[in-house]
Length: 323
Ligand code: ADP
Ligand code: TRP
Image 1: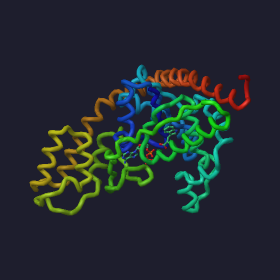
Image 2 (image 1 turned 90 degrees about the vertical axis):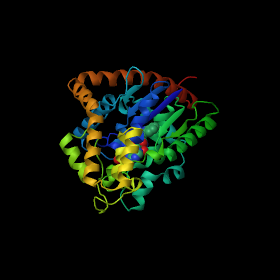
Image 3 (image 1 turned 90 degrees about the horizontal axis):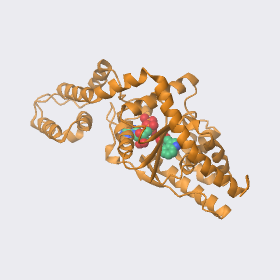
Image 4 (image 1 turned 135 degrees about the vertical axis):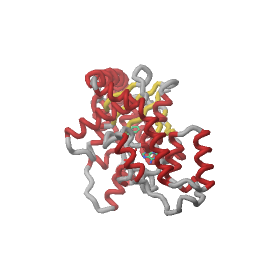
């Protein structure tokens, strides 16, 4: 089965990105035909500094590989290395109704806040539909916020198939990623770049500790019993701990005598030990940037093979080439 997903290189990945998405992508690589790409064309709607975008894209690839994405199992590539996707976007645009895009949240949120939106942001879901349809993707693992875009993709695919009376595109299904994995940020709200409350995955130990120490907690004294389920420090600790460690920590919360400083130190030690091996792998990969570029180029070559085939089906259906 073809699994496909994309992630935007809009900044360094944080704990929310890993536990909410990347970890699950990596888990799927073993028994499915997984295609994962770094959505640099989408990121152009927000990242306007060319050096920054190049840096972010390479960092995203390094992070994914260091975290266990195995290029011999999954295909990893840059979205912009498959230019066929831009051509397909145009073909799809000609069957996309305006009202479908007007209700899509990226554009709508901006417009509702009175901010200027460009055509790129407005048509963003059509590029996303092209990303998905061009590889005959069957399953698209995404966070809840992207489900609307998969529905739009299905709608566009159906309209195209109906318009030209051919089964050009397969209809993809969304697979909503485990939403219980909603990772809290430094302020206890959902961790997100837009809330400025993130902890980056590959943060250096000193900075990591400092960030963890700044997590907002209530002002209960050390001796007071505490409810682990109300505490972001515990929620974060639970991500890195095994079952026995989680239970033991929850008991210490409830018993009283555990201060937040100590809980944060335990979280730091757990997280730092967890990321250690990935940090080492990342350093190795970063020392051989050319090797990483080769992985991306090989991924793109494989993805392009499939993309050309599907684009040709679409071109031929609508009268742009023989067939
Ligand atoms: P951000 O909100 O920081 O801009 P993105 O929207 O780029 O992050 O998220 C990329 C992926 O990571 C999405 O699939 C999203 O569902 C997941 N994700 C982001 N933040 C969290 C979080 N706090 N908890 C769980 N998943 C998250
Ligand atoms: N829009 C997605 C996000 O912001 C990223 C993305 C682009 C994507 N194209 C895709 C996800 C295709 C799944 C399939 O998270």
